[in-house]
Length: 385
Ligand code: LLP
Image 1 (cartoon, rainbow, N blue to C red):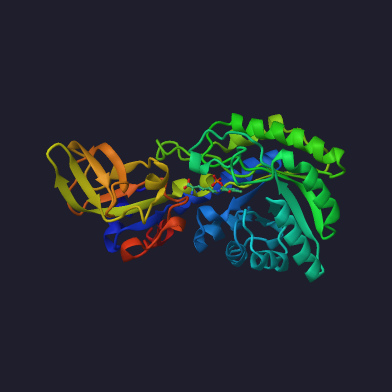
Image 2 (cartoon, protein in one colour; image 1 turned 45 degrees about the vertical axis):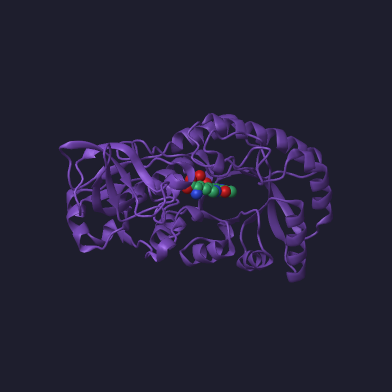
């Protein structure tokens, strides 16, 4: 969280920047490691959520494995201490070049999403004289009850292989000699706060496992994907994600057979709450009925509100009272570039520091240089103590 001494040091930096509270990150990662250890679940951190070197090193240092969505993420994860042999390589569009990168690195598993992808991996592995360990990403047709842009596990999504294609899948798996089938992968979506979704995924796994085993494919690895949500409404009071709830839902609904391992791929839940955007008010503008605090950050710094109608808690760090009602908007020339409408907080002044909370996940990684603005840098709490 942002304490007084951190706030005083912010004057030294040009805004906007991402402020990472490394104590929050360390506590969150430790909680994941200890809770999941108790339940015998292995976590593979989804590098896409935040791929800053220092964040990655903190997470790999706590013993978590990695989930990567591109060849570049694989290279970065290994450079930052993740074990290549614990990497899950996901993605609906793995290119030949990325597959070769992954095979050379010796990743643990390719999570495969189409019949054609299986054939390509088989051919490339054969050409290199190696076997590729694979899991099949099955489309579970489970609704994650989240925003439609981050729902990935329903029948109409582009992800995974649906059960109607299983005959062709089993024929392909039997034919592909350079693939070593290990298990089943699912990912229903992101920002999931209803633990019933994981209970549903677990029961779908049991149904699919039966079908795979009836066709002679032994399921030794079960991967329920990422998706655990965080509290965007109360990130300062309730910053620890419900990792016990997730682990409990899995343990209760997924009886394991001897030799089976269970994995998850959390991204957001590990890094969201340690990150804050620190920005200054450039101008305060009063309309006839409305007042605006116009910040020096915008949708190019945090695209989530504009893209998913996401709500991030906003705070005027410089002025707590008197309270006023106004809109907090970004600096980009688009109306969707709004962080909070009818926000009630301390009266805004030019130069005030504002924080936009819960920006550690899918914040800095999704930055862009629209309008040729500079990318916002990272500032770490460890450096300003
Ligand atoms: N595994 C797979 C296969 C995924 O596609 C994802 C996220 C994850 C794991 C990690 O999910 P998480 O635990 O972070 O929910 N940019 C969006 C989120 C996109 C998520 C994409 N896939 C946002 O800002 O909400």
